[in-house]
Amino acid sequence: MERELVLNIDNGQYISTGCSGEEKENVKFSNVDLENKTILITGTAGFIGANLVLQLLKRVESITVIGLDNMNDYYDVTIKEYRLQQIEAIAAARKKSTWTFIKGNIADKTMVDQVFQQYKPDIVVNLAAQAGVRYSITNPDAYIESNLIGFYNILEACRHSYDHGASGVQHLVYASSSSVYGSNKKIPYSTEDKVDHPVSLYAATKKSNELMAHAYAKLYNIPSTGLRFFTVYGPAGRPDMAYFGFTNKLCKGETIEVFNYGNCKRDFTYIDDIVEGVKRVMQCAPEKRIGEDGLPIPPYALYNIGNNHPENLLDFVDILQQELILAGVLPAAYNFEAHKKLVPMQPGDVPVTYADTAALEKDFGFKPSTSLRDGLRRFAQWYKEFYQS
Image 1: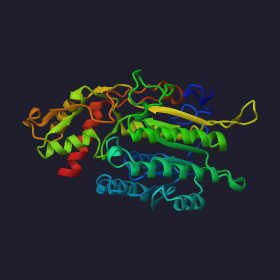
Image 2: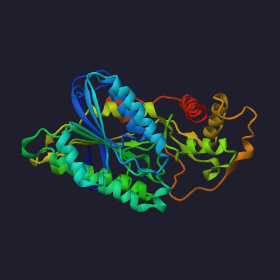
Image 3: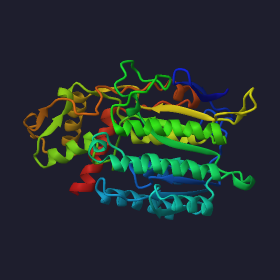
């Protein structure tokens, strides 16, 4: 079976095809073995990055992981430090694997080039980015620096990893976002949908990443896969996400604002499902092939990773409240209704996110399945232990 993603220049749509190779454990089709490989993961102090590193160290017998993060203060740095401590604890127990953390900014081209030259990564997972829709309205410079300049530096380093006949990067995997779908009316969102009308700068930078990666795949034959993540949540997540921010406010007795009067729907995806999806995709690089014109067919792919089950925001808030009470974060008699306010939609937000995950399921035999209640229960238990124990 083959699966590849090419860009139809006439209509701007992505046409999905895939990866081929022999079967590996936990991967339906694989052509990249993680054993004894050097993996560079940017954004390793971030939510997805830290959890990916943990899983790689736990489940791959012999692996070298290089972590890169600038440790900025977009949100509470103590949570980033906590994640790194979890990694250090696991890494210390792994006899055949190594973990190296580098504090640096991917917008620093000299530093990025030095990391590639010194460690010569086989696989690169770029998760470093300035996240958040609303923050992009008030702090656009951060998005240009990290999401555009930073990603360009990663692409250039991947390009030059092949210099002088070197084997170079076998697979570049990078984070995109469900935000690229903007206010598309068609649901569920498919990677074949046209996404030319972003409603936030954040979404525009993520769409730009996909286009840049496609160009580099075409020009320099770099196997690249973009992943459109859908509303990731879980323990030690990002405090700027709704579930975390709501919890902080409720614990302080403050009022939470539920946007679009509670009529938003989100495809909430639990962190373990996201990481499992990333790990499988890492092992399936789009194949390098030559077209009839004698030029490379871009070894490029794009997938949604979402729960394929959007939840109404009011239902989400109700489940969160129940689980916070069950975990002892909030008292049993907490007057939830007195701390809830329904407000209009905010600029840059969209009313619904809903992932079509058929391609992910077909190519990797995997579909995110953690229920919202189970995921929020684990978050509430972590929150109790981290903040209130």
